[in-house]
Amino acid sequence: MFQKILIANRGEIALRVLRACKELGIQTVVVHSTADADAMHVRLADESVCIGPPQSRDSYLNIHQIVAACEITGADAVHPGYGFLSENAKFADILAAHNITFIGPSGDHIRIMGDKIEAKRTAKRLGIPVVPGSDGAISEEKEAKRVAAEIGYPVIIKASAGGGGRGMKVARTEADLELALQTARSEAGAAFGDDAVYIEKYLEKPRHIELQVFGDGAGRGVHFGERDCSLQRRHQKVWEEANSPALNAEERARIGGICAKAVADLGYSGAGTIEFLYEDGEFYFIEMNTRLQVEHPVTEAITGIDLVHEQIRVASGGGLSVRQEDIKFNGHAIECRINAEDPRTFTPSPGTITHFHTPGGLGIRVDSGVYSGYKIPPYYDSLIGKLIVHGRNRVECMMRLRRALDEFVVDGIKTTLPLFRDLVGNADIANGDYDIHWLEKYLAKED
Ligand code: ADP
Image (tube, rainbow, N blue to C red; front, side, top):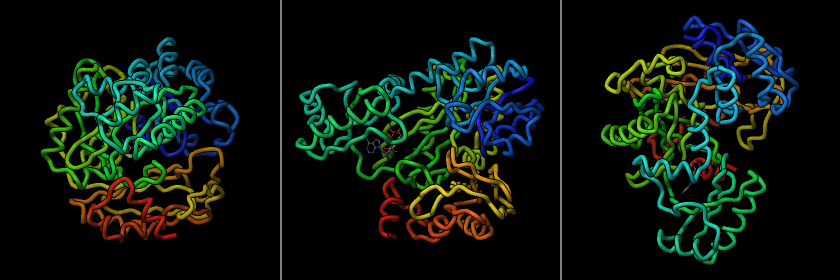
């Protein structure tokens, strides 16, 4: 087991990882920018190292500073959290070259999944169902027309290097195709420095369903069921559930089995999330994230398994602590992402939190790095906390969520809490009847 882990992140996820390390008796080092000197993760860690000015590129994304912090403090492993360097293959390679363990998969696996065309090809080879579309990059209009005619309109053009929902264009008819292809390519070139694009069938009203998987790096793989993250705004997840209200146990076991076998066959090590669009009973792979997800706590709530403990264990060579048959799903869990944003316009609302009171009681978990008097710096993501509620079934979970949202107090800044108070009383949400476009339509109606 590791002696000392350096946490290369900030905010609630740095605290989340720190808690797991403390439970396992592992010493902790955190890094921070000058803007985060007062942050909770800095206060609670055994050691902290300031790695640079507020801008992420000079601090949380500065690989050399982070490696230097490991060497100075004698850390033997790094947990990257999510965002920042968590899916940076070069970072994983550099740590390996310094004999420091990256708590995550190999640089090569990160690289494969970071390239969408390569990821899709790999998924297909491993027996994962993918969205019908081109086999690789499309450069000519003629080829695009041929593929689109074959799979049928509407189609979507996507950037191979894409991320954050950018570089995607929908073409509803052949007449739209030329422009969609050109726009997607120039957007991809400008945003990612790589203009490779591919084409696939556009699904009209899918749900976003993702499978939590784990590999031990030596040919074993398990799945921890799925999460439904269909409630999104601008491709950003807002509310997540486990399990999905749309799946039954048979479908879960079938797609879970496919995913677990895929990570085993790949020789994948650590946590991963295989994301699908789900429509009319069919799953369509869209991407794999090679890291811990923001929404992992809903999976922890229904399985009772600490996924960060599991990551640390696997990375240290201890293997998986569970077999597939040990993983049982108990009840229902929902997570609400609480952002420091206006609940209607979603413009960021940094500033000082004058009063912060979190709900409690059975089945309630709040993961947050903020406190009364904390000044939210304007430089980073606006997520200030996550409310995770667990109940014996979805109805009990929703009742408890409504009560918890009423108790939650964040004064001094705007937050997305009022949005969740509206959603919890909505009939479609109560029925679990929503797809990936539901929230955008709901918000447009409210305006
Ligand atoms: P990114 O990495 O940019 O987030 P994804 O491939 O994960 O890109 O897609 C992001 C979102 O775009 C999906 O959650 C979905 O809302 C939409 N999308 C992607 N592919 C399709 C498709 N084939 N049909 C319909 N919507 C899609």
